[in-house]
Length: 536
Image 1 (spheres, rainbow, N blue to C red):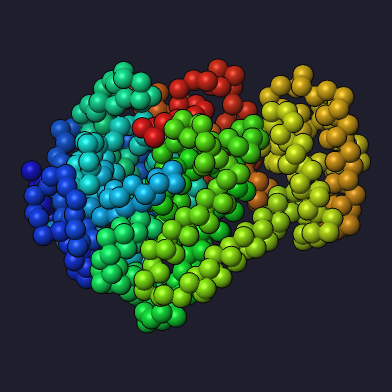
Image 2 (tube, rainbow, N blue to C red):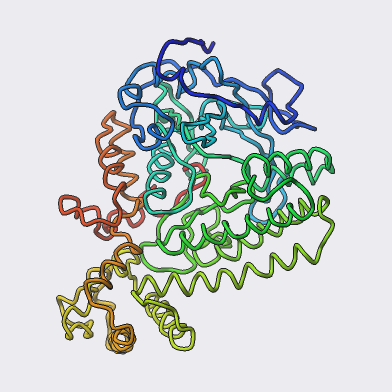
């Protein structure tokens, strides 16, 4: 049973649980798997675990909540954020939502292994929802146990914080705590499950509402509750749009489209692939949410997906992410249509998505290669040709663009065949650089150099600008796996080291150079280092 205690810094957290106060909940108090009707959530308590141990915490998120580092290193903190202890003002619940998974309507899904502890209002008047992932079953767990393993929890914790420091809209992670208990998982879905260490991540976000929260109500024709949820969302998360009305609903949908475009452009900028862009994994705030089988492009492959479940269709591949974002927004438009009943207005907003993304893509890619502005008449071809060339041989995306910023300090860096050319560090198999490739790349570098000359920007200033766009360090899957392997033996040092490294992903960190290298050959096909399953 969860205990409720007081008298610590944690009790100073100001909870204002508007979601459970303002919206209807499940009338069934018992926690068993079922279809939940006419409700936005079900109240449920986290499971008590036997021997929780703090692995790591984010000092930045703790500060945002008003918690000192001393407080985070107490047993009380560990007990609260593993779910063993509930603070008096907490009101834990799991949300009801549905979703389209791999393009098909899946019906009710919901928080199957996530439990929201409540909403904190911090000193800056920001609303922050605290959510435990892996804290036990809920009515939405279906056939699962509601738990999480250390493997997936390390990945979620590190990636949430890495994305934030990369400047990408994301949910955050406050803490990572092991439970002291084993969890049975079939990592490869091949009929060979094994016991793994259990863990809980405390996620933090202004809201965890997804497209699917609105889809489930619309699919059930629960239009009164759909309106209540939409109005609540606008009042709470979009108050700048004004009082709820048809006109406000359209402005709201436009803003969701805008923030979704911005988020995906950031993903594309750093080579991030989400892996499971189902509508239940799409935030209404345009935040990256639910870190499962994600990955970063290592070799630049436009059709690469990190998700083994998606290996056949590649629906959620790197290059498909912009299209899937629009498709998901269409499903949200269908869900809220009954509140608006103006098909043309919604379609016009959806049509603007493509133009908005293309403009953003041009500007983003121009910045990645160091241009002051994008001139479509010349730069579309320059950028398009580079992307084609990058896919001819296995070229590390992160290293290539980072090294590109250092070119042309002198006028002798256009011959890629030179053994010490700066870009050669990006090639996984330099022997693939045949005569045809060298000619294509050298011609491109010559055209690129001429285009840079038009901007007349000093080399060092251009490099500085490019280095703020092109990270040196990203959370490559093999790095996360190395941290997992150590953590599973009780050694959390690499989790801590990577967390520190990823706080400054754009900076030169001379003592950390080994983490900026290409994926090693041993990691090419090692479990967890390339593609992953949804169990990851």
